[in-house]
Image 1 (cartoon, rainbow, N blue to C red):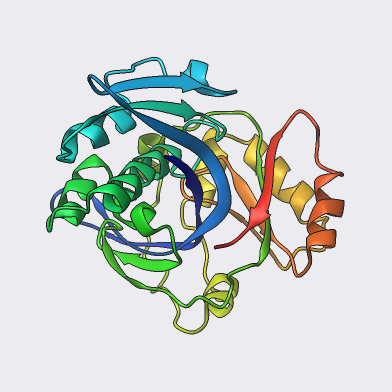
Image 2 (image 1 turned 120 degrees about the vertical axis):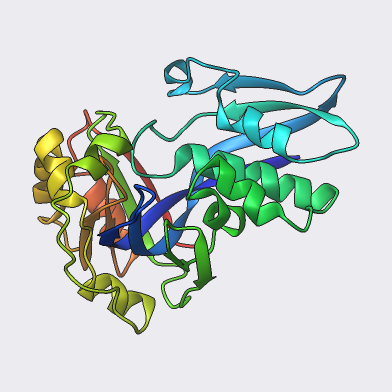
Length: 265
């Protein structure tokens, strides 16, 4: 089997309050790009994981890799040898590891079905993992695991992802949030939510990684209708009305930065 681990972006990410358990209550509009890491699976005597690709050297703990953890979470009558082609940068706000786990869940669902408590198993791997299983536009609440279907009007929208090749850990970015509740996620179409919404982690991320501001400034010179940082950064994304506009903009981006083009699912 072969499966794409679709890159996750947050069209909007609103932090509301600090919970008693230490987590931040949030509201977000998840969306997914039709490109990302690639996984392939073969039946094997025991579960194995092999990593290849540009960003594979950054995955230094094979036993702690979320793909291995996802394999251990799901009952299967056979073992799998998984090859992970790591095309998404690590610690980049794209949910790369969560997307990889989501791909394992999808392949398991296709071949054997999933247990009734699959969502709880996915949530134990990470707050983004449940959304990454279906990898379709969805609204996330709580810590991101309370999901409801999102409006699908942006499916097919051209998108460009840009990362300055600087990893940015999620924990310090959340810790840098000033705690101010700037209001709820708006309602409406996905386009309306994206345009009116915001990413409350953008300011603390830029404080830790100033080059993000340079990326955003460069992307605002393109004919995109939305420019925003995804998740906790440092990847930024831009949405366009046409593929030609996206591709023309991509050609102007600093070649030292990583980029990936695609369409929203």
